[in-house]
Image 1 (cartoon, one colour):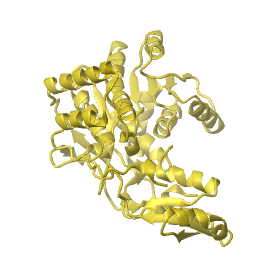
Image 2 (cartoon, helix red, strand yellow; image 1 turned 120 degrees about the vertical axis):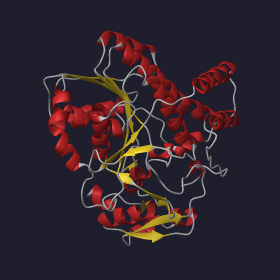
Image 3 (cartoon, one colour; image 1 turned 120 degrees about the horizontal axis):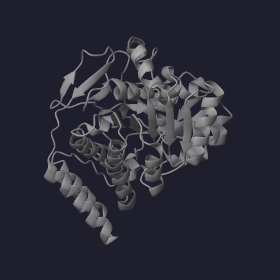
Length: 395
């Protein structure tokens, strides 16, 4: 299947910008020592591939998923083959003592790219997963920046999200708070980041779920009223690499909106997906109906689908990459916009956040409301959208 066609496009986003910057990108990669954290996730693998194919001196990859790391290596060996540089993978947690030992053993990296994240809106449903989101999206970022700087890094990159612009869910808010910590850290180490749209068929995404549901002969479910921007995995890797190597300190890269990047509903993609596999989407009014008629409809080359209006917490009505309070540079690239930032941050707020998190952890007992209240204190305009219903309660 052609991913571009499924998401409603006929051409890649960044080809012109990549071609225009290729000499500079290749030269920097060829002489660089790279560490990619979270490199076995969907975006991480795309970033690793973009670096690997430009033959770096050193490329080390860290991820907690041993199985995904194996697939990353198999995929590279089966397509790009081998490089002369030092390529290694380490199945460890970036918040662990083992990672700290790796950073000391490595003698440092020129570029540290952090792609690790808890990215699901569903992760805010309980206080324990929500605290882990704070750890992964915020505190581990702060810690790995310190470790990168201690190792003499020239640049630190980490991925943000379009949901950090005017966030309505805790995941987006956690990334916005992360960006606040980045501004402070940028005084000591050059940092850049990227906000981009949903990555089509990334692990755990709804589109990835289509693959799983199809393989298991199960009904599809998708919101009929949620429209999103999508980029391909390769485009996510290209945007991250461009930001890391070509971004100035505190820059946030994002895809420009144009005729090549437009909103599309999940239901539309589901219909295109099934058509590409020779099936017609068969609408069902309820989950029970969809489950009950699966065998009957598949025999007629029809696939039961529940396309219903969204009513779960944290779903943003529309996607945006920047706010009217941010300064933009829209002239530097053809298809990439850049948010320019001054190092603005409130030291007392950042200290309050870490002190409060430390206190909650020390108590070994906290509820979701305590974390929501803390996020509101950090982001007074946080428009948290809580309906009391969560994605885990739906098919």
